[in-house]
Image (cartoon, rainbow, N blue to C red; front, side):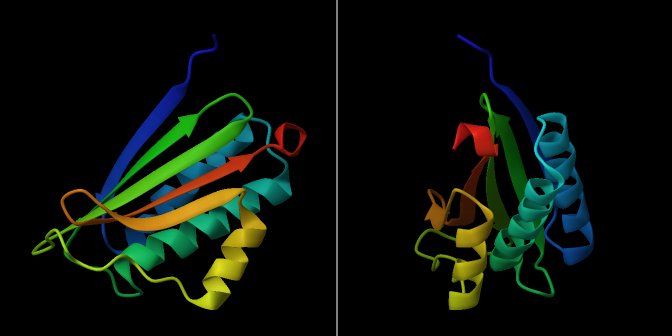
Amino acid sequence: MPTQEEVRLVVPATPEFLRLARVTATGLASRLGFSYDDVEDLRLAIDELCFALIGSKGKEGTVSLRYAMPEGALEIEGAARFAGSAPGDPAPVLSELSKQILGALVDDYDVFVANGGEPSFRLRKARPEER
């Protein structure tokens, strides 16, 4: 059974720090042998999903990201912790355009509120030969 590697990253929940989330995703995807187009797709998907969590201006708090690398794929989970968030807070809302964009960019994604009231997302992108 192959081992699964993972990388974790925690950044402030502001747009200027989300660059680190994109760079990490694209670096890992390149390392896994994704094509240039697939790497760019991941970069755009991370933008869409992180901005769904924090909005365009950001919030006081952090975004935690977990990048898992099962064979032939990259799976990314993100969760935001904001000052004053609580269970029962609404899930992040994606526009119809964002849903269409994400549907074209990644194999699977979801946005939801995790236990403890953390707005969260999950995405999965496999290399074309693994789809």
